[in-house]
Image (tube, rainbow, N blue to C red; front, side, top):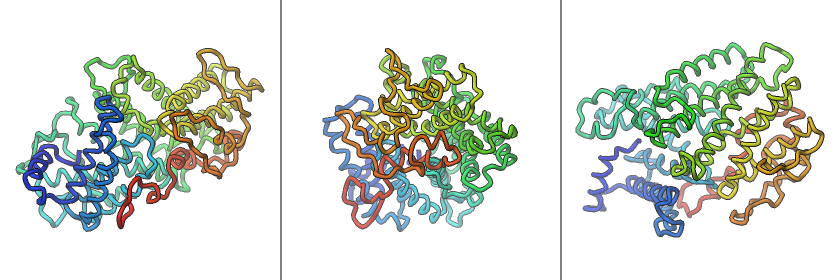
Length: 498
């Protein structure tokens, strides 16, 4: 994306002819690519876990970091930004269960890119850049922009990038083969009717630019301003409607057999981001002035968006099963996409608890969505350590919600989810310390103090005014690793924290 494939190939060939002529930052990119190739080879079933390319991949990641340090990337060397972004991508997107926090790497890349002027369009810079250099800088900057918003939403903090300080234009919708270092005038963009990788990337950038003010609004003291909420909602809807037809969501069963798996996943990601934006924007009203009908529409939008997220989660999960459409590409459905569903499930739980006048059909529909979501998390426990906690939490919430009507925990039936044996009112710390880790998973010890500001699960349902949505957003992410990145590096990092 932000490294031109043909140019990199030429540099790779030149490297083997004269290794000493290559910069350490470029070498860092090469080692990151080696790590990604080994990781994806195993994920796709092209190599076994014991294959040398897999067993040595940690060494490639270690060398990528060491090359960054040796290359003095903080001095804004050529390829510093790109090497940092590759390293970030390895840790964030390709670690099935990250114990390394990726946000410090992105923070460094963002600040370094701003120092180097990546946030300004090359037309406004004093340095004369070629069309090729300008386009590659735009790609790198917008990659940073996408993940700045993604990480801020996950961490419950404002984004680092302020749109008023940036004027970098969108990348052109082109393939790498359409231009190179010798291009003097960039060719016209390809039609949106033809799907190429840059089309999805551009749509993603447009979407996150609408998500940024939503996150900022949700974190501000004006989050209950209904007029501003409606304005942001309208802008989000306009952005969603502008998505090209090839990238609009559709049921898996109705997807053309000629559509590539990555295209199906891109549709899912864009729709998920839109629904997440609606939830973040409207969820402050879930427990605010509950008797005021002026906020009923916001609450309805929030709940419906959350339910839609859970439906999509289940739809795609089923397609990843052995006979499903996306089974061969199941490696693409990582815990990064799973995390988006946790706060959606909490919204549905809160709605079931707060809305006393719901019809039996509506309650059954929402409980079924929660049960399916818990089933997805439970199936991921052998691979994702945070899935253990999410499965516990959802199980307890479902049991408590069911007990509100039946006054007793639901019995397990064949073909249905098995509800937890423990008391639905048990404190969260007690539940999360129960030994339910599968044998193949390393034992996970829950923290002595819960990461939320609530002492037990009942507090979410019985006292919704105490609920902090930022705590929900960071609940699983904090559990995945903690915040001291330096202490969790899988290798010795000399003179630097990445």
